[in-house]
Length: 237
Image (cartoon, rainbow, N blue to C red):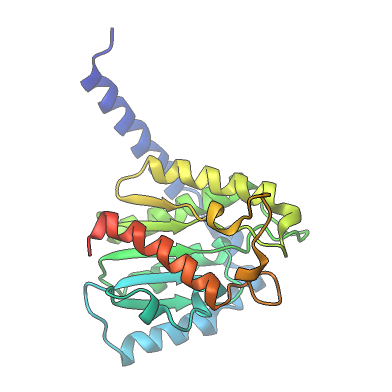
């Protein structure tokens, strides 16, 4: 009978092997795509901000797609935490993974919070849930190359009316990413699904802008409450 200690060692070995295999998966497929290269100017703007502005070392880095970029009151909503805001509209994990080191490495911080929601949108170029999860795994590996112990939070992709027709696929991607978070040190999945669905299980349209995709002020207020609650559990108040 295998001892508990041996089982723990085997589990750690398997997890380490998965990380190594993920690291060996090149991003060349995405790196040279025009739609990935198109974000170069946005990333350079971030780098310029890094030169022009200094941030507290205890700040929480929020990075990802348009929901991060459009969060005008993020500094106020996330108090008492200091915030570094690095969102660019239309971000996908397939480009974020390429630029992750340039976005994240300049910032010693108390935590990293990521929200990216455009890899599955109902278009012909959609990725499978498994592909999305693997890109998250690769992004996490890139983060851990420099920040081995910094808490990393993934905010679940929100159910929206605009993308309700692909919600089953989005939900599956969320579930696969949650499993990855559960099996990695200091990595946390922030679930938001229940807060953004009605009792009938449909998106709460009153929390979104007219495009039925991006959060409005009330939506951000709900989002902030959930996110801060999860940060409190790990970072304290």
